[in-house]
Image 1: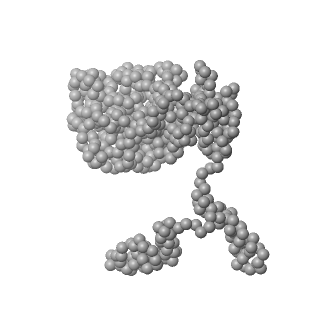
Image 2: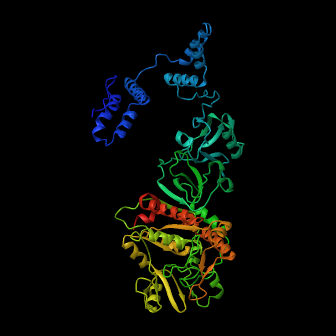
Image 3: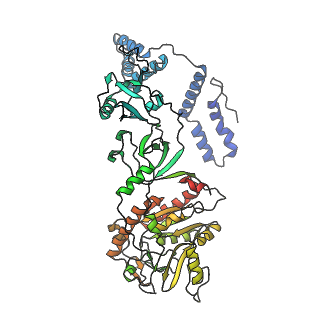
Length: 589
């Protein structure tokens, strides 16, 4: 195959390479149909024309051509005027029509600008009334288009002077390098600002376009060189600066949504950090409340949460048969120990679980420092935690994942202190241990969840999770949402998926033939969903999302079981191959 020449001329280069390509590929093509396709594609005239244009441009670019005339727009006007005096043939009419087109006029104007290298904006002349004795004053001109200036001002409490409070990283003021924090502002576009409020000055700046002239007295403080921030945080709450009465300048604020990743550009101010959205091409930073400041605000406005003792029922409590068709409970499959609404009324047989959720309610979610992470082939899989209200279909989704690939997915085997039955095998349905050993493991924090039913303990241990991961499988763990926080460690790196119910109408429609399992009796009788069940499911989902939503990495609405499963499977595939933002602490043991 001929090499691609970098020379000029019609006898060498990419054009000849494309022309010869079908013949070179002919021995490697299996069918005449494929060969015909190649000849047609590479013989296309439009493709040859594009290649010729490319080679001509490449050649002239190397020659570094200079414009013959610098005023093509004026020349075009002269030509049009001269043609008007000629007999109007069809060719002249067409040429006049072309010369009158705005697109051609714009092209010629750009040509003239480039040819004359006239790129810089025209600045106004220097003021004539500068006090020569006032040598500490600087006159600064900045060109501002539609973007904010990128600086905030305030009145000094001691001197009463208007001073620059902060410079927004990446903004017009920051890029100029001419204005600094602490500089005293005397005039804006010749208007004295001594007697004006900061809001009035901001209004003047907002209305100004093009060049803005500042008269300032430089600050005596020396600023340290600025380094671009390399700290990234995930926002755990929604923020709108327009609704924040405390922000010093709403226009300088940065809005974000829960889950957004932000790059911190400056933490110089203990109350207001400067940040930008990760990956945003705009270099200008915006103000966000600092972690400490936002935590204080949340703590002041947050009502006291009354935490009820958490009662855990047996493994059969309200386990959904799930799906959109009638079904039956899968014995031994349900591994989490869930709250039963009905059992709350008759909780004499319940064991009071460790009240770890009381500690969770004291936490105030604001920001979490994160870094990029991608699972390496030699690493264990990340733990996948599934969370959702009773009856939402979580159990069925987990079952579908398991049967899709039993070698790739696995679930934990729970512990119990009840006697082993004849048809059961130790380590299959349950891991059978003594009551004393179970209580010892509870004291040593070896259980994720545990409870008591009819004088027997049941629980899911941390070691059971490790056992699944050690087999090089993805561990599917179905737990109460308050336990998620204690699983968020370097060892497990959990990915938390919240299975959310659809609207009330869709629940009535899609669950009309489905049944749930009540723990009112040992037989685990399957009963149809009631209206009360639907309302309880939606209410429970709302509570979970409001209290623990900041811990969820993915939310899937189980409106249609097949669609929800497809979305869940796609999420699993991405989790094993793509890069995700995770807490910084997960990257170091």
